[in-house]
Length: 493
Image (cartoon, rainbow, N blue to C red; front, side, top):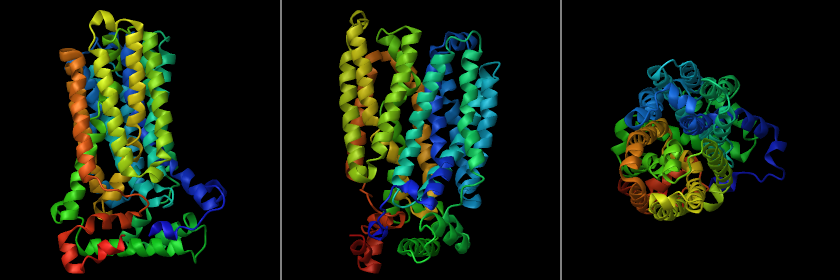
């Protein structure tokens, strides 16, 4: 197994020049989720700002939903081209392309003169960011050192909390600015991370797996030699990685796994498809989307109406997410995937049950500071549990999908993510307004169903290479057992 091949390191990773350089270059992919986190928190902050509400005519209901979902429409549009781009151009160039499109969207959003221009800008932001977020976890999964792959993808996901934190305090700071720059400045600052990505993309190496697939084996060897083996041509890790990658890609080419129909060809791939499809919905249908996009509405309902207080709470929630996202990303390999999934869902469910009880009191009682702040405190607890599975979702998708289906897996996952957010963007403000506290009961029920799906269908992939993970699925494939006598199953134990 991979964990038996990786040589022991007696110093911290930054003492090794190849690994240090690789991790710094991979920041071009690691920071990609800053845009997502920044956008949700910024939108929360903008809804609190009187200048923004006045400029766009106090949007509510479906009009507010369209502003929130502008980015989701862009996401859906980009998913149709993301997989072909990544398969044809590699993992590195699409990141730069997505960054360029996103920057155009930021310019439109910042310069918006009306509702339509603002939504159009958000569409392009979603379009460009989706190309980034499809390519980046694949690049990290295929290029990062195998001992750090899961942590690197986890940190990538936790940068969303960093973006959320930055946006929360930026909107708090610009609240005192007179005129439209109170919301235009936060919009403009959304460009910073993508500018950083565009510059760093020039220097980051390409995925060795993509290079080998395109008959550029010597280039892949040099990349792995420099960044994984620290220049040691006799490294057992180097030999193992080259052998595993070449063997897996050769087998998958024989099986013609580039077709979309491959997802339903075998029992193993149907199992993978179920996970990829459901994961996009599960991680977004936890009740988190209500808080991340409509905090202003929630706080008004529980009696907290001060703009300054709402902005401070938005900043506090973002700080809470940033801390727990980074904390749990360090424990993915220690705890395993299933415990993080299951404990996270359980914790969120019980948190929402308490929130449901607290918000069920009559309006006059909810206006009391004790009850309102108790509800806010439970949102912080909920946020901590949400960050248990969130940092490892992209890593898990990369592990579940075989090489030639990996780009398609992230497209399918992206569709689930976008559709769930699109639904939430329109339904959440309507549900909150129509049935108030009872709306939380819906999310409690959804969390229970999420737990059941994960418990029965999501396998553990802890401490396995990307190639070894495929055997977790293949060992239960009837066709494989018949043709190979169950050898794959015995090898993976």
